[in-house]
Length: 268
Image (cartoon, rainbow, N blue to C red; front, side):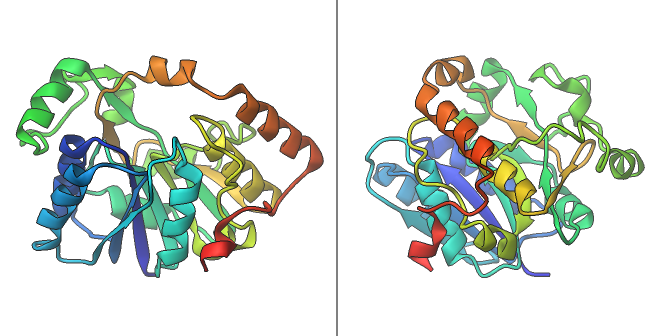
């Protein structure tokens, strides 16, 4: 199948450079990489342009004006532009395990979407990595002092991953935009992301819940599809979560909404 890797970013060009370098080191590349830029300054465009000259697959930059946190909208524009049958979605502040794409493709099933997991790196290690703008040459392992939490998620074990995929937190339906994959036709069926979501929080869970209501089962990607998340002040982000977004998501769930009104169809 043809795969599209969507990378979300906003004004973090040093971290994006690390992510793009890690993509170049993958054992299997996606068929295209689409960067969804939620209004970054020209520094981000310069980083992308420098990689476009040496990327072995199309590296597409989609930008819109900075009018606040509009992640749902920029992801919809990327989904509309994507030519892949299968969408793999990450953030632009990650280091990908060399088998990241391979693992997502291996786990993909018709009528299902995948929620991955992540290893968080600490602030000191992140500053060192971003200073060089290249991923660490040594593999990050279970014993690495760069890890802040989810240490167990550094372990790659495909047999265990296959066992856990349909079973791990089977009844908990939520999304993780920095490590998630789904069929593009399923995204079109539910009209992609709901652009009602502006400000931090809610859009990933909403997408996962609507995919589930549309008949797609959730698969958990554990011990495979590993990502290492560069440090950022996540607690500060969580404080900025829009309560209105959470209330809206709850209301949509109660109403059983599957296809959102303001979604990706406007860009198709």
